[in-house]
Length: 422
Image (tube, rainbow, N blue to C red; front, side, top):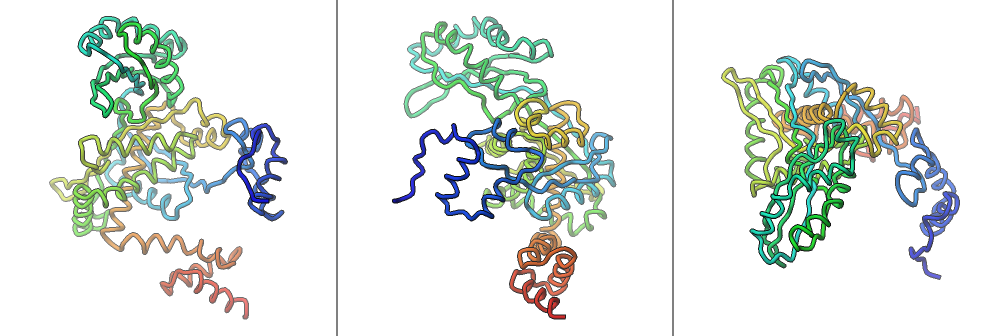
C-alpha cells in the first residue's frame, strides 16, 4: 500500500498518535522519535498552543553579542542563529564602534499600515472625496476595536489614499496608519482594517476585498549611525576596501542581496531570540531596499575628514515586546530581560545597531582576509564534531584543522583516527 499524506483529523490527534503516523510514513527509527520528543524550555504543551499539528520543538544555539554601546547604554544582545561567526562578528563590530563612542540610534513612532483594497468604483475622484469627508468617522470606528491601545496613546492616527493601476482595474488602496505601541501589531491592524471595510463600502459604493497589514512598515523606521576608528578597523587600506565593497553593493543587485543578508543575520537572530516575526522583518527590509525601483543596500558608508569610517543604517522594524511569541516562549521572555529594553522602539534601535555592526564586520573581513577564512576557522569545531570528535577532542581536532588550513570532514576523521591510535 502506498504512503499518503492525506490524513483526516491529524490536528485532533494527541502527540503520541501524530508521532506514530509520522514514524510510519517517514520510516523513522525509535531513536529518531526519541529525538523529536526532546524539548527544551519550550515544552510540548506550550508549543502545541502556538501552532498546529505539533510533534516537537526545534532548538537553535542562543549566543550573546557583547560590546554594544547604544545611545550611551550598554547592552548584551541575545542572538538565536545556527551560522558560525555571526555572533563573534557582531561583537567585534560593536567593539570597534566603542572606540568612537558606540552607536547613535533613533526611531519613528511604532506606526503600522493597514491596507484596504477598494474595487468596482465608477467615479474614482468622488470615492476619494467621500472617504476623506468621512475620515474622522472611519478612524473613530477603527479605534473602537481596541480601546486599551487608544488609552495607551496608540490607535488609528491617520488615513491615506492611493490610486493604483492593476491588470484588472484601477483600484483605491486606503492606508490606515495605526500606532501599535509596544506590539508588533499585525493583529490589531487586521482587526481595525476589517472593522472599517463595510463602512468604506457604504461610503463609496465600491467592493472591499483585502484588508490586511502591510509588512512594508515605512512609517516604523529604525536608524543607527557609528564612527569606526580607521586604525581599529585596520588602517586606511581596509577602510578603502570597505568603501569599494559598498560601492559594489550599491551598484549590483547580485552583490547587494548578500550585503543585505549580512545585515539581516543580526536583525533576524535578535528577532528569533525575542520571539518576533522574522518573515515580516525580512520582507519589510528587502521591500524597503527596492522602494526606489532599484534594490539598494540597507546601510551606507563613507569616510570623514580624518579618514575614519562612518556607517549608517535605516530599515523598517516591525517588532514588539508584547504579544505573539514574545511571552508564550519562555526563552524569548528571558531574552527580553537580558536586553533590558523598555519599548518596541528601543528594540528597533538595538536591531538597527546590531545590523550595522554585522555589516561592518562582514565588509571588514571581505576587505582584508576574506570572509571564508575567518568563517571557516570558527566552523572548524563543527567539522570536528561531524567527524565524531567529542569533549576536549573537538578543540584539539579543530586546532589542527586550522593550523593545516584543511578544514574538511575527511581530514578531521584522519586526525581523529591518529589521535585514537596513540
